[in-house]
Length: 352
Image (cartoon, rainbow, N blue to C red; front, side, top):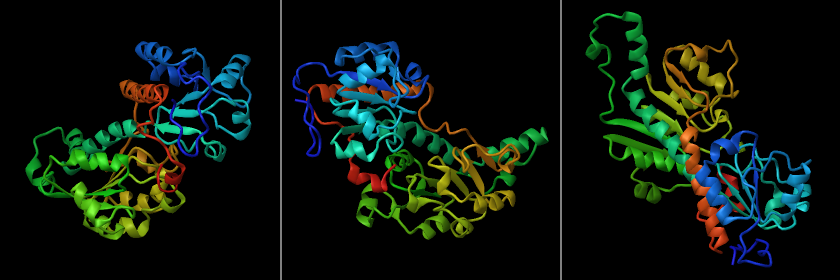
């Protein structure tokens, strides 16, 4: 039988049939997410048109409306339209949403949880490239690669780099991980082979769990004051809005680096900019507030800032990992097994 959590609606009447499935995501995403091999596997696991993608569920085309009415499963990704009560009324057979990306906050509504729809997310798969980006940023930041590249381009001549970079390097440096999310935990794993000390701030992780992770649990102030690198991996929640403000940034040592691959709203931009303009702090920012800095923002040209366009998460070939994850969850569902990575409503208060 299909998986039916305690609060979930039961399966449709014939659990041995392939479940009817509809793809739903923003225009252009499905073509990058699904390779030919994914579409072949998709039609083997579910009754679906692998080329029919619903971009709008509130005012669907006749073909989408018919598929939605029959759908037992929605396979969603970035830009999926909200699953409001009205949309769910038009999908009376819907039992599960398999999200081939991270957060489901943008399209799942209270109506989904009230109707007991089972939900899976590929957040664990999407965590991998973000953690890899972060590892590269940590190692490059401690090595002062951005600084030396700018200086080298300007000098174009022999120079005493050993003297100028005497304080650089990755030996016995301290990395502060803000948030033991999936990404934060993966970063911790990736840092283990290196000769680095790792601090962790997460109000939901006690000292015993931190010890199992191989890190030292500290307060937010202690993390900021004691870290050469502060890397942000907390979820975007009301409680984490501007979590790093003027007080916390002032605690960071001179020459320290802030890495943010989470959400721009976790760092107060009005507090961060003066620290960067003075040159006291460095930053690797894959996300900012606002998401796109204005054209005249100093962030574009500061030599101590590496600004990237929200590319730490899955892109290019990495999207196929998300599709692999989603189809593995679909196979579990089709065989009546529980999802490997379920999203539970009680966890949404402290997760992305």
